[in-house]
Structures are given as C-alpha cells and as structure tokens.
Amino acid sequence: MAEEEKTMWVLCASCGHQNRKHRILHEKTVDIFTAEDEPPEFNEHHRLVQCMGCETIKYVISKSDWFTHPEAPPWENVETDFKVYPDAPGANQQRLPALPKMRRLTMKGNY
Image 1: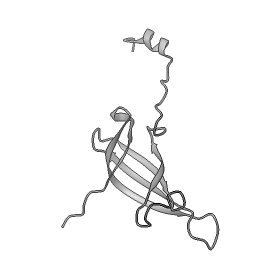
Image 2 (image 1 turned 180 degrees about the vertical axis):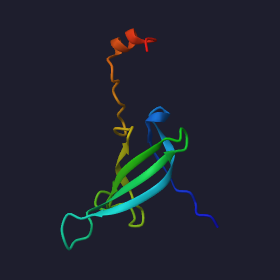
Image 3 (image 1 turned 30 degrees about the vertical axis):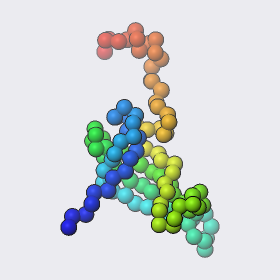
C-alpha cells in the first residue's frame, strides 16, 4: 500500500496571497531546549513544500508546544507562528509595492 501524501495549508503569495494546499516534499522537527536536563520547551518544524495550485516551492517554519495549548490532547500537535519563505511575510500582511502608486501609474506600459 502506498504511503499517503502529506499536505498542509499555508499562505501562497503566488496564488493571490490566499491560503492554499501544499504538498510536503520534506520535513524535519527539531526539539528546542532552554534548560539542560529538562524536556524541550517547544518543537520547531521545518518543511519544504510545493503549492498544489501554482507549483511554487516554499520553505515553511512553524512552532508547537504544549504550554500554549493545554486544552489540546498530547497526541495533537497544535502549530503556530508560521513563517513562509520567500513570499509570505505573515498571516494577515501583504507586501507593500516596491514603487509608490503614483510612480506605478506613470510608468504603466513603459517597460
């Protein structure tokens, strides 16, 4: 039986800055320790993903811990603080245009 393809939803600037389904190409979870001889403070998840719409490749970092979400059962991994590279600065932010609006309007068609 073939292994089920892993997917996740992240922001895709190439698809109009919308949450899109992405295929997970590779992933690695790292335990982050703040004190010696104690359990990890949180996990950091690193993933290489491919958008299932526009097919662009992205690097996604997220975090999970059990202190922030004590209501979640221990087997559920609640991830937060998603950072998507290269194109999504944050969940509710869009990049500002590189040129001011007036300059873009005057340059329209002059490439």
